[in-house]
Length: 445
Image (cartoon, rainbow, N blue to C red; front, side):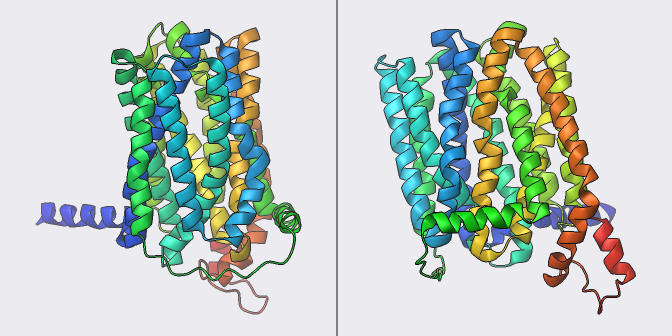
């Protein structure tokens, strides 16, 4: 009887974690994207190793990261306007097809032994432009696949778990393939991995999104989105912290080939293991968020996990023992993913529907768009002061940012409270008299 009760409880808990999969459209998206993202992570590991093998330069690792991600910073806000104006499913189909073409060209150049560093730079920039449209559109599209808005946070967390399951599997496969048959096969498999997600999008039945025709200039809509984001302190504070962590902390991933080769004296398999451990931590973090039933408490979690991420980056920079460093990266991946996904969930919960695409583009710009500057900065600093000292400095700044965000939490709570009350997340306040329940819920943010 006791075992049966435990079993029933475990099944119920699993159903809570994966509840967004009950929606057919989201289920199709989840399966297709899991395969596609595995290929994406294989390509990401392969391109880092390829650049370092060809050039033996930490600086060029940073440059490649910069040119691949700078379009996200420059173009994502405009992509957000498109996401609010046009059919998101059709736009996702276009971005997936273009990304498949990019990976195919890279595979052909490598397998025919014609690859040069300028090819990598140009094609990385092309993929960056594709991604600057794909990422905010994909984020905004989530709400169209989940019929019950109460399950939106769960879907966002499962999106993160999907990314990090792929992040766990992809680098491990890439490490083996690079060591045995070379980098080109990783790009070829990535090109093929886009087929399932394209088929899943074609198989979806999405209700026609009634988009109001816009007569205003696209730049006016962009200005409206910027004004909305930066005049509402909860959105502004979340985006600024995310941007800081992305600038100073996230570029540690760019320097992984340096640690794998020069610090731990390993090869592509060690690189795959390091990235995979970070992926395991991020997957655990995503599942932790998926098990949550409410957005309440996420404000504190954003501050705590941003601080955790900074601490672990410092610890990794000081470690010279591989197994200890792998464990540290597990904690680092947890902190980074929980902060990122929690920020996404809060933003998607409080944003006005007609500005969702634009706010998600600012989210993408803060998380992905700041990374190229971080990559360039990290590559430059690593060439002068070494990779460990570069990560040490970044970790310290992340911790400072986390404490600054935490100091603003009381003000953020006050601004978000009416939105949560209106959406039924917390009890309504009766005519200016805050109930004990309302105050208690407010304190939980």
